[in-house]
Length: 400
Image (cartoon, rainbow, N blue to C red; front, side, top):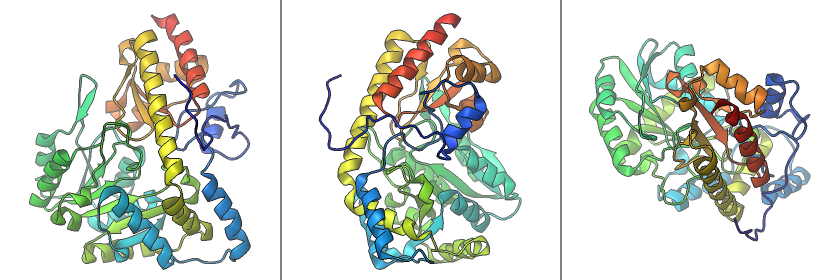
């Protein structure tokens, strides 16, 4: 692949050991004998340096402010709403925006606000594990609506979705778009069918759109709230710059609820455990910088991800055809199908972590529909990705 000149650095290999990085510490826990230089491919943060505009901006910020309690300024709200309008054509008003310490906290509060104890919440599986955990730990009933996987492509089971939505105790659907882990970017037509089913049955929608900026070439993201006025009144949209700009550690959730009654209900739940709109002082500044000064970095980052995706698919097709990559339409999380090898989940985990020294997110953690799969994080330097694929090839040759 020809080298492309870039302004930003996406090829320096970072050593995050000893920094408290969750995925690096987990790697060493999973295999205490892991060799030096091995990089993990789990957990959705990037092995890229942060945009320099953000790091330099935060350094300057430390000279300007006191790290006290902070509430959002108008410039912050304008940055977030302008980003949504500019990128996705959705006219979100500043008063609809609620800021939370992380998106997961907002999900839990939303589950409690919009579904009563013992009432049903629909989840399209396999899916990000904290969703199911949040439903069950908050005493709500989990209604699984498994995605249909046919010839490596995932689609929504609309027949089952309608049946579940019609249940008298069903109150809520959690939608993941782009879908983590299968990588689908739901089309406007698919979202229209989902929204119509939910409106017909008075089912509210929490739409996780935290990966919405990370869309591969040939695909287009549509926010659920942008499909129709009625849908916008019947949803809670969850955004964050964390995935896009590698800012997961600032714990910033940008939550939009247009309907006033619903917004008040969510704020009531949030206020039981958190101060609504109180974030760490540097979080507001980091978000504002990301959404106003980092378009160029994001554009180069997306180009790198597309190249990494192309490299992986070509490598597997030519050298490991039994490993089937599901088309990654969005996110930087590649869903890989290893079912052709016939391993049980623990044997597969052992082979990956102990023999290949590959640390993915195991598919079974996303629900039983994920058994036999692995989720691989492609947000890394190309040299790291190539070495990982070569290790995978070496080990899988033993099992041909």
